[in-house]
Image (cartoon, rainbow over all chains, first blue to last red; front, side):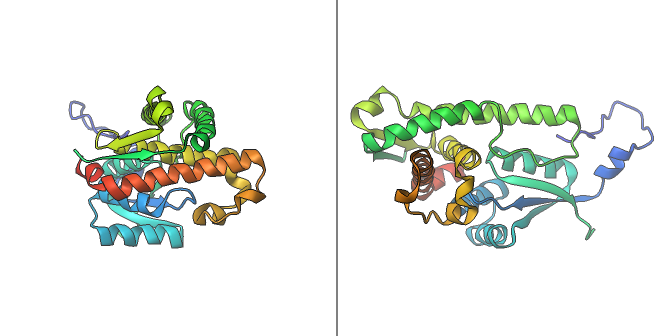
Length: 101
Length: 153
């Protein structure tokens, strides 16, 4: 899904600014909204990330009480796919660089 | 296949369907939860948006299709593993749009708790808030009884 997905048929070229920006690890952050039910958010986390009940509930409470929760970290392409899926479930999610790595 | 049937009070629910139908029109053009990724390529962002809108439209159509002629004769709606996920998502989309269009003046705290005296609200706001609660009830029923169906797909 990434816009920088490499085409293996093409010969290497100097990396663009966009490509450089997309490297490294990214966090998927779910933001709070006052509408979606707690039980709904728990179910979505279990469904999308395969969390167990306890983990899903903990992440949901982070979103609810702190306004955000980092639910996944990894390569940009997969992070984008998770944001897209969360958006399909009508949750608001953003990507941010994982500065810890 | 697990299935739940819910008998609804037609005089209560019928006016709420008008609210949902009105919002369906707006949801056909706008995402319930706006895209929050700002650093995507324009073309890529448009493709995402189109795909999300298409899914959202299908969800809302499925929700509205529950309330067909049969519903108006017996007042019963049914949920099972074939429609549970799509309906629970449609309810989320419509609830988000209800907040945008009608419910913001009530404040987020009231929307989160659902704790409001309906009798203090003007008619359009009262109907919108009842619709908001009605859709939340459908979501809770589905999550409570058909959670396994959704997680298993």
